[in-house]
Image (tube, rainbow, N blue to C red; front, side, top):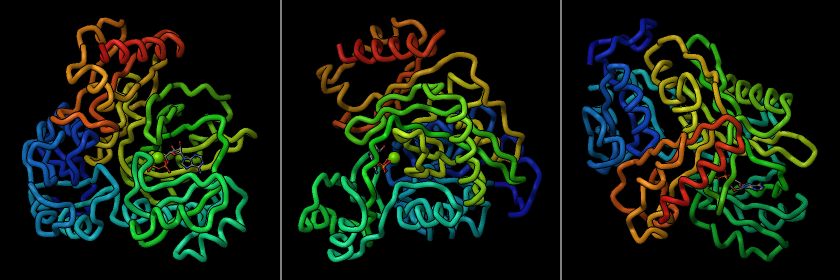
Length: 388
Ligand SMILES: Nc1ncnc2c1ncn2[C@@H]1O[C@H](COP(=O)(O)OP(=O)(O)O)[C@@H](O)[C@H]1O
Ligand SMILES: [Mg+2]
């Protein structure tokens, strides 16, 4: 790395190195965007052949909580970011003392804990489903009394893709609590929202406080995992505007430098409730690679490198469908990509993961079309064809 002071305001020159903590697909797609613009990429991950390592210039093979390794990443990088929330904030901050860490360690601490996340939203006056913090069986039983059911009980930390949560349809004597007990220091009991739809907005915010929000995505989850993102979301323009404003408020309240995804529920009464935050590119923003002038990954690279943000305009409706390990299972281990790609307007993304397990995110297909219906039909057809 070049010796750039932590408070430098100059853009990073191409050839500089972006360090990424976490080597998954989000890191991989960020790395590809970075390399497209002539930057180098260093990644820290325990897996030397992680999706990001496969396209990176340097690999630091270490656990996410290895502070010395995080410092090593910092020494070879000109700026550092993280691509998932469950990295260790102490290690990230140790790296941040050497090289600029965006978003900050405090954003990471807040968003990796549902209790802190919801408290931050509450302090900022932003809407969430009613919830209570749970630290004991008594808290849980009292929560069932104080909130109207049905409910969802979630671990405060390390949940993802619907893991670490239980839907509670009828008040029980503690069964749900015991199922999650010990997995996390605290839990959150929240009202189950009978939503019209789920949506997300991804807001990029630069060091000068400028914000730009990508078009709102309508998200369909299956078994707690994102399945389909439809953009533009099939909502009234004023709802999209409000969702976008909420995402900006979140980015400002947390003082994010980078990108933050804001997952939301649209209730039956057209009220918007914020469900979850992710201070990084997001699965529901993969559509931006083909759908927008600037992808969420390139936008992050631009912010990290102190370059102006790019236009987020869309020219055509775009739909993304995830390819989980289930597709491989249906295709006896060998999906038919040729047939999948015979559908017009489709783009295939595979993350280079060797083992296809059920529920594991292996790749995605993005389809553009003249209308949302056409794009949706093509994306689903393409995935169906992949299954053989
Ligand atoms: N309070 C809720 N009401 C209704 N559905 C919920 C609620 N919380 C979560 N879900 C469903 O479960 C999915 C995953 O939950 P989420 O809190 O986003 O955790 P994660 O994405 O980290 O697994 C959501 O996208 C939504 O479909
Ligand atoms: Mg979520």
